[in-house]
Image 1 (spheres, each protein chain N blue to C red):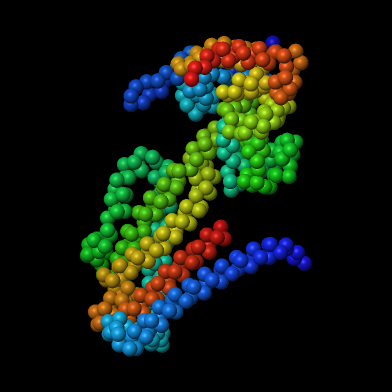
Image 2: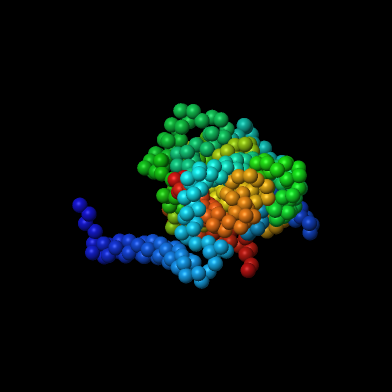
Length: 249
Length: 261
């Protein structure tokens, strides 16, 4: 049995505005094991991103609790790559280290190695404007990995890309996360993306959100995300989750 | 050496041609204007006592150069512009930074800044003279009033319009306000700061001339005022022309600096 890295229990989030209260998250409980890739999926506007921003410490929960079972460094990746246009790729990746004051030769070498390993060697001293959307997102991931996080929170990290780049970068990001032995929680609205990448999928209900179902994703032959899409079980999972989401327009 | 295709050579030729046309037309306009003015004056169609003439302006210019007073006046105007421009720029950036770091404070002071910015500062002229004294200080003070608030407003707005996602990113990395400011807000806004400087140069010049018109014993504004009082239109127009050239030069310099950055 693998170690639990994160336990979330009865998380609740209420937003206040002038017209009243909105209960975004009603009662959310789940846990995440070490080295696991967990996806959170739910109808749009159900508050799935809120969970990540609470875990990242950007927002406070209105109720409930969450616990990292050790001193955990968090990496957070958003839909937009937010690369600073006036810094080159390497300097963009070093920004987390600069901020937390751990920029030294060793850490810098580590970041350069990451960039080289993941196909960005020739771009190290280029500027973000010279890179494609997919490559920029890969840089954003390496910037996140630079601070050696124990857990990665991916908030619709691939959603801004065109479909083909998204498929390719899913494969990349998946393999980088697995190679580096990281744990990840991904929020997405894309059922296929979630099934192809995850070990487990948490399906949320619409607002006020509760955990509707949790799926363990098992493929007979687990492969890369793109290949997983061809697996027999893929369509089954897709059908079930689609029904859970209960989409009406 | 260069093996451009025929089309490309043609294309380059076209660009050069357009550039030449623009330059020649620009020169033609000013030359034509000066010739008309001179001819109208020569044949007494306009009264040179009221409207002067290019040759009179030129003579006045030479006279001012010869007795050395021209450079003295230009120097003083420049000096006043430089001082008020520097204070407004540095002060504007510092105050905008304070506002950025303290949202509450900026909210509280917002209506006052707006009022001070939209108030026609020349209305304060008499008060400034009484309070600060009829000296170079009140001229600089006047110029400062005109340029400072617009600088604060422009730079503060640039600071707060930085993409929120950068701020989220930095917060997740655990950045403090100073780090966010130094690593994102300031470097993202070099262009808006330069743009503010451009406006600032003209504002400072306007303020200085306004101040000199109200109170002074030297400077181009003084020359204009003095010229009008003794009804020396040649002097007035000469000063205005010099002022036009100076303001263009200052704008030009900042523009060059901007291109370098």
